[in-house]
Length: 239
Image (cartoon, rainbow, N blue to C red; front, side, top):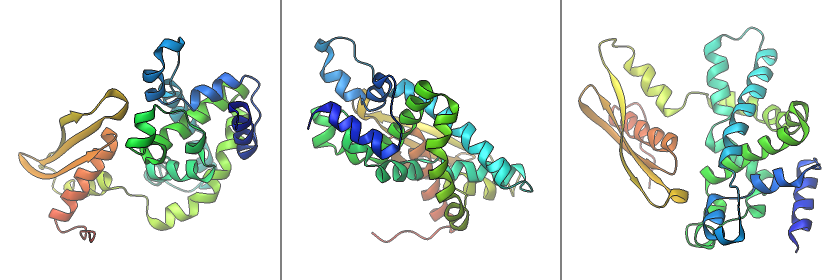
């Protein structure tokens, strides 16, 4: 199947036709593809688009929650937004439109490490796609794309609880004001397009948990999860 045909199928899936297809191509280009095709000229990965898409998504989600829950306090709105734009949720959105199938990867990233199905990669690509629509069609078109995902998920997110591991650990520690919680980056491994981060979380000088992840956020969350298990606030998941 030609690249043009594949992009057309994705446009149908997201119900948006690009005026300038380069925005979509950039959103689908992983850094590993750029690294393996440098000789073909200047290639742009989706990393900058991801940055912009994250901000656009945050604004759209915040506005939606502000009007959907007019009596809610800031804490509820903040927690709910965080749950709606977290890595797991965005990866699920991306899987819903088979976004990974359309992405351009370097051979090593796509085959050996399963990058096409990695949550962090899919979440980043979804944010980059939002940026592509925003740049091509403006904020209104970005809203038309994002809001169906948000509206279909918000009730389930609230029912499941909106407090992530870091927030839960912080809330517990804050019950004793003199205690100090801190996270420390203790290691980075792998090439630039496939980094693995290691974090430790401390209560004062006491190590509570360690975590590894493809993003710093993911590693911190894993460290916080381990800390909650140590403190008896979370049951350890069976292996």
